[in-house]
Length: 197
Length: 197
Image (tube, rainbow over all chains, first blue to last red; front, side, top):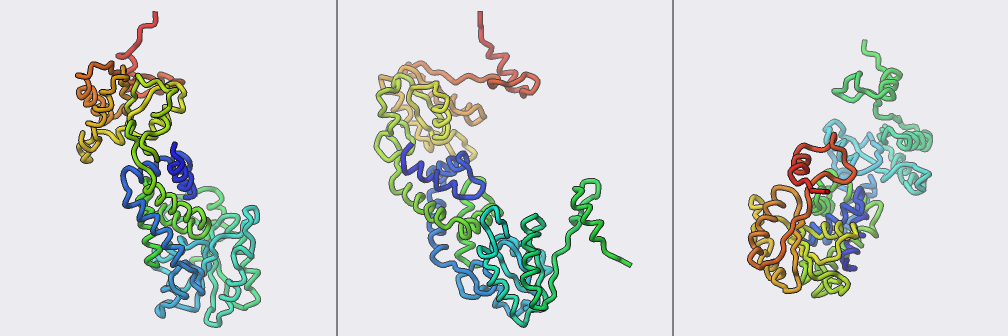
């Protein structure tokens, strides 16, 4: 196989979820079926690294110093929701039920992968939480081992700031049936039951 | 979301099997976790279109006029195996049981997708088969409707050249059990049974 082609296949493997088989398929597809799309992709990648930086306020990717969401005066700036990834922000926005601000960790604490408090720039989060407008910090990391550990770490980190700290609710998913719910979720749903009368 | 970022996500969707969700995940992954891999990918794509052409003999992608395989004097140039895609060539080579040459159609006849004899450059295949060294043409298109139709078309196309024309065998896969084989395959295996005494 030509060196240029094997380089292309090799470089496609950097995409998450793409192994040798998919990379080979993608390479031939781009060459044969979608040269315009491929060149466009190459330029978009180079363009992104040229123009995108991090928002000083929420840590999300943006082209300006402060992103559109953080500079939107219509948002409630007394609540800060701490999330792991930019994709989580998109999910919360799709619910149309949160109007506060965000802070994106860009990961979770995971010592085995070499991700500690320094890699997540926890100081920046601390500085952000100091903001006197912020009354409540909602921790919305994932309900995985790493996400829970990150949540505990953040709680410890910012508790001296005297803000209200909350964690999004854990329990049964909407529309779920008890019969088909895993026992871990069900156990949590019982222990975190809510008084309704 | 920033325009540059949404452009990146949009352009990732040109990859086969990548929808809006995967494209979003890939974009953030590249930006956050693998900037070097991403830049490398962009350059590999641009490089491919700059350097890769088609082999005059087998129609595969290569950097030279005639690819390494076609110019390898150790290959048996009396047999030509006609396949749909370059990935099929890789599969045949991995079997280590074919030492002839290949011709790659770069697709299959599929009128509904606008792929006719012209799009597959069937004239070039005809010209290639004219080569007096070639004694046998093995048709190894897929055993799908389109692959079978392509096989029939090629047979008609080249029959006047007086070469031996064969089709790779259809039947039960190696290691398969009758109980778990689909009826179509089983029916073919019966009708194409081989005398063994």
